[in-house]
Image (cartoon, rainbow over all chains, first blue to last red; front, side, top):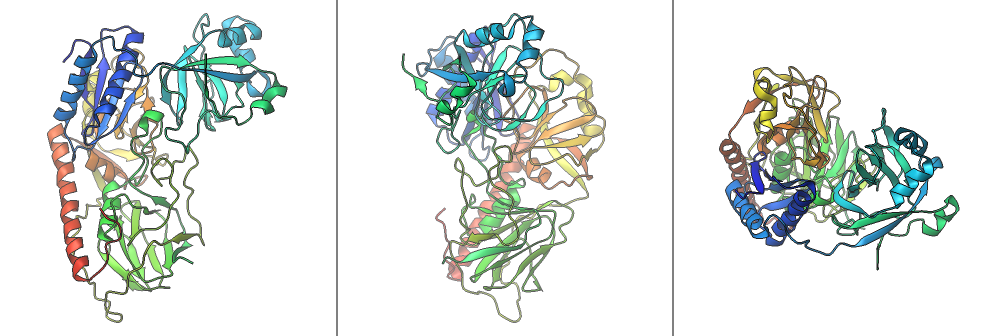
Length: 237
Length: 328
């Protein structure tokens, strides 16, 4: 194959392309560019592409195409892109209002204690930089972003919650996420956004895409209603 | 007022299709009929598009009544099917008069029965599919008294008294054994399990009650990962065989979360996934290793059989002047 991508069989209906020998940032950029390239080709039989951090899952109907065809196109597109592809679309920036702590962020005190910081310091770090969306995860379009520059990774909860409210803003390890739908979850919750993160009835369901950035902004609990149910939208400038 | 199909005894029944495609990138799993083959054949037997909405009846007895003359097909697990109290065959189109009760009882050896109606019925869609997504809360189970709007009707086409089955369409009927053989190919992380990977094929596994359309949990002598190190979350295919922890295998099915961080030991084949959609909790499953070529060939053979059936259905429907409802 190419020096920077290996392609492996993944059952009778999928292949995995994995970036190798690249740093995390370049590997992530490559698998997303490769997913976009494959989408653009509209290869018969290929129905789903799932780019994540260093891997791209390509799912297809093996009665309509075959492994060799998909593999050949993946290799060709990988070669065309090279190890350092430009982003397909320019990144956009989303500002996300968050009510921190209290009932909306019940794990804020615990996370602060684990990190040896005050609650204000945790909020300052969480709101202090633009965080890049790396991929969309479960359940349904959850934006998985880089974590804030905390001094060390944040442990998961010892016992996961059976229900996390939609809009909950969580961190774990060196990652951060907004939970778009009510769901079980094992990540500590720092706060909650009143805005509507995604719309299951639009296509695509999210306004954001991998490569875009999120900037969290603290708001007071009394400001909740000002933002309640507004759709999350990219800002200009 | 449009004609309806009224649910009389719901049991566990949902409106299904073949699932939500092209949305994995947004974190939406495929979902759709657990036994894709049986669901596809049911629609083909009604002259419908393969992806038309149909009913997935799970384990429990079911009854419904159409308000117009129509044609239905019942596939999937063996069951007792009656129309107006008269036994009718599975895997063939069956004529139903307005007001007659269609009953599906005694589902056995498998878990799910599919019931398609000529022309299908109206269904809510989300992202291109009517398939329920339990995580999103879309597509609730039907209840007694629910009405589905039929899209078309069909005059009675068999003899009103003798009820001799009119069709002999020879649909491809899968087997429903007591111990299931499920075909798998090597997964991308097969090497991480070293010699213990062979355990997958050595002895049968038992299906845990904590199994559903998201994944099946299987108990037995599980392989062990012999390597260490974190795996970054990545897309995993439907059918991925994982060993999360403890003494259970996890086999991901159509409702699986799109990404996961466990090594993938093996992947259930496309034909194996349809079979797995029929396995009941408590039943035994034996995995059989296949090469990629064998797996793809089996999938194509099964699909060709459905394509050939579609041709026979068209010929029969043309001869009987049954209007095939949806293009395709």
